[in-house]
Amino acid sequence: MSQKIGFVGVGRMGANMARRLHDCGYRVTAIHDINHAAAAALAQELGSTASTTLAGVTAAADLIITVVTDDAAMRAIFAANGDSLLRGAQGRTFINCATLAPATHLAVEAAAEAAGAHALEGCMASSITQAREGSLYLMMAGRPEVFESVRPVLEKLSSQMRHVGPTGEAAKVKALVNMVMNINTAGLAEGLGLAAALGLDLTMVREIFAQTGAASRVLVTDGEDMQNRDHACFFSAAHAAKDSGIALHLATGLGLKLPLAAATRAQFERMVQAGLGELDKSGIAELTFPGRMETAD
Image (cartoon, rainbow, N blue to C red; front, side, top):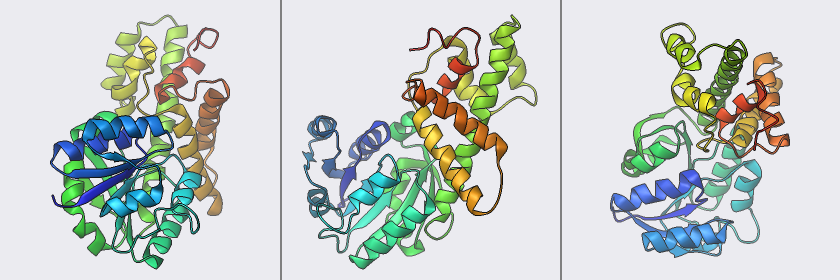
């Protein structure tokens, strides 16, 4: 555990991954976030340094884990000019955990290797609780030898992980995972919304769903929250809209039409436009339960 680890992006997921590695005995030496207050608070908690620059993180760490919001943010932190993680990056390894377009991961890998560094995809199919507990499901992609070199760290973050192939492949699989999850979430919200309109006991309906073909992982994670209007955020509606867009972009490039994915994306974008984008994805029920939109926060 002699590796020095840096983090860029310490929102809900990144902060809890940093806490987990700190608890496991790793030295988290540098933290950076565009929210400087969040970086400073976490750095104080972990006895780390809140770096005001990206280059400062690279200088202070051997392994840098990035958890940023989208493709634009990812390209910005690996920019060719100005403050960038690529400055002084020779010998460093980057594990990039954001849900992004495959092309972005490929561009980052090429830029890292040109700088004498290594890059891996570390797509996550889990949520905040799993990040804190070290029970993430990780879909890794990139050079096998680089993956093996950081496996001990990854094993502290995950209960299961799978190396799915060269860079770009994990992003494709993650886009599919989130596309199907989002469709399931929207379908469950419509089913429970109709049940509410019919005057049915929603607890009874959920129990029957769980024993029939209506069962799903989303029913377990989101069903009760939809019923109780508890939309504390674990995976935001804004992220659901973004991630559905990644899958649709891939489909368009192949000449495929995905009407369910398109309709689901439209629902999550409707949430964003209504000011509900920072609710958990379970908040899509606010669009389908009778009378809720009028009182939605």
